[in-house]
Image 1 (cartoon, rainbow, N blue to C red):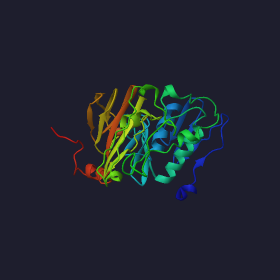
Image 2: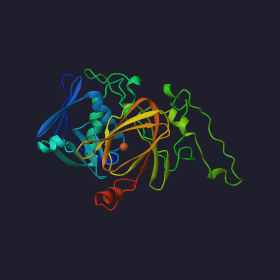
Image 3: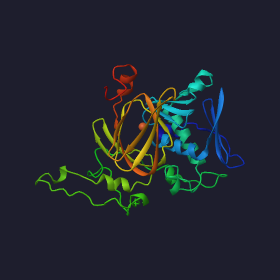
Image 4: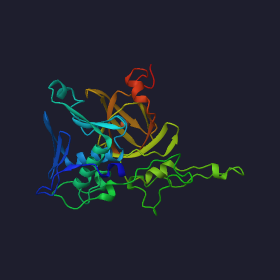
Length: 328
Ligand SMILES: [Fe+2]
C-alpha cells in the first residue's frame, strides 16, 4: 500500500532470543519464549504469545473490524473507521476505578503497519495463528523462521456472491482447499441451475456447506454474499474465539452446524450478562452494547450476518437506534 510504505514503524534490533520490540505511541511491546509483555505509562500486562498472536492476526486481517477487538479483558482496539484507539484497561471496571487505564488514538495506517510488522516478526515457522490448535505447531521458543504465507492470507470479500462470474471462486482440492478433517461427511455436490433461455448468465448458485467445509481457517468471518449493506459472513469455528468482540451494532448469528457456547459480557465494564448455547439451527441477535467470546468444542459452521452501514455506530451512540434488534 503506497500511502503506508513510508510509515515509520518503531522497532528495535532483535533481542538475544531473536525478537524485535515495538513501540506505538506510549505503548511498548516485547516478546520472549512464552509471553508477550506490554507496558504503558500507568501499567503493564502479560499475555501468552500464542493467544496474543491469534488475536493480533484477526485484528490485522479484519482491518480492526466493527467496534472493539479485545485481545483479553485488558488490551484491545476500537475502530473509528479512519483512526483506531489502542487501549489498556479502558473496558475493565477494575482498571478504570484504579485509574490505571490508558487510551491512545492512531491514524489507521500507523497502527496497521505496526501490528503487521509485530505479527510477521513474532510468528515462528510452523505456527499458524488462524488454524485450530490441533492443526498447527507451537508459537513458543526463541525466534525460528517465519510463516508469512499463513499470516498474509487473502481474506474472502465477495463483491456480490461467491460463484458469480468474475467474483470469488469456489474452493476445491486443486486450488488448495481440501475438505477439513471434521467435515468429511459434508456433501460436496453443487446445485443445478436450469435457466430460462436468455437468463443463463444472470443466475449463480453454490453449496455454502461444501464451501465452508473447505475453510482452512477458524474464527474468520469472510463475506460470501452482499445485498447493499447486508453482508453474509459465514465462518468455521473450533476451540476459542481468540478475541472478545465488542459490538458497535447488532450482529446476528445463525448456527449452521454443531455447537458454540458464548460468554456475553457488558461491552464497557466486562460484567457478565449471559451464557448462550447455540445448537445447529439456532438464531441469536447479539445486542450493540455487549461483547462476546465463543467456544466451539468441535469444528462448527456459523453464519455471522452483519449490517455494514457506516451510519449505525453513530445512530446507536446518539440513542436514535436501540441497541437491540427486538424489544419485548
Ligand atoms: Fe462479533
